[in-house]
Image (cartoon, rainbow, N blue to C red; front, side, top):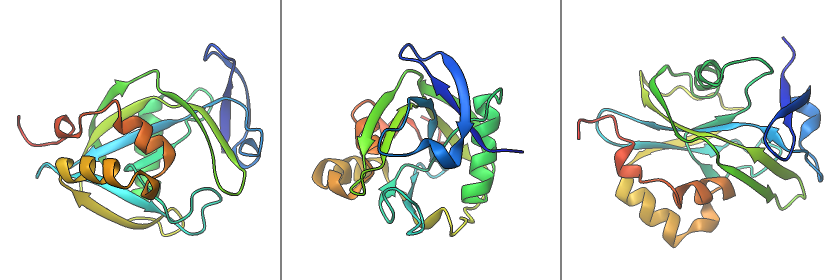
Length: 178
C-alpha cells in the first residue's frame, strides 16, 4: 500500500493526497497528522528520541509517537499501526484529548511541518521494542518530571511537543487508577 498523506484546506477539510515522501519540504502544504502520548500502569509517560536517520529533528526528544493516517484510514487504526511499527508495542484505551491541535514549525535544515495534528492518549499494552530507524532511545518518565523538563529545557524537545505540553496535564494521562 502506498503511504500517502491527506492534504487539507485552511478549514481542515481533506482536499487530496500526496505521497508521504514528497509532502515535507521548505513549503509543506497543510496536511493531517496525529500525536500520541502513551502511559503505563505505573503512571509513567513514554517519551522517545528520534532516530538520527530522521530527515527532521534527528536525535531530538518527542512525545511517544506521531504519524499520518492514510486517506480513508480511521485515525485509531493509524495509531495502532504506528505504535506497532515505531515502538513495537500494542496500545489500548485510545482517547482523543485535543482534536483541533494545529501547528507549523521549521527545522534547522529548512524543512517545514504544517499539520492539523489531533492529540491522543493511550495505555501501553506491552513492552517497547523500538524500530531503530524511527526511535534511537526512549524513557518512561514521571509526569511531574516531564513537565519540569519541558519548562526548563524546551530546546531539548521537538517544537510540537512543547506546544502540546502547554495544553496537556500529563498527570491525567497515566494508566494507573486516579
